[in-house]
Image (cartoon, rainbow, N blue to C red; front, side, top):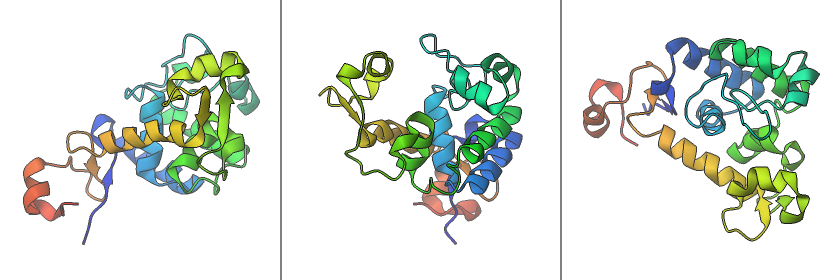
Length: 196
């Protein structure tokens, strides 16, 4: 049997892993994709209080202040929560906005967080152009080819890299047993872990 690793699972608590998997399933996302998106948004910290100094976005999926208010909370309240508590608000965000069940791919999952209008759009869909002012300035790092257009593919590529890093042996846990992936086990297949 081929066991699936959980990206970034070794970097969070067992309680967080369990809750994140549960939320991912409820919203229709692959658990490792969900973890990769949160890792990217928090700079790999999974810190519910991490805040973007420019926009005020806060937490596991970088809730914008207006988004938090629409959900019935504030970014300050979100920042005071534990990561596990904040996952309930992450779930509420996806469900309340109608994104749950529409985010079966990594790019669409990340678009639900960054630019919801791009859910279901092709990879070359332009999210933000250089002439969009503040939005482009705040997200300029996503313009990988520096052509003045941030596409869905470019934005998702950085989260895909987060997924790849999250699946490295030091960062992932075995999906079924919660054990950290051990290099020797991955190579030899010891302990029920099958190399990928």
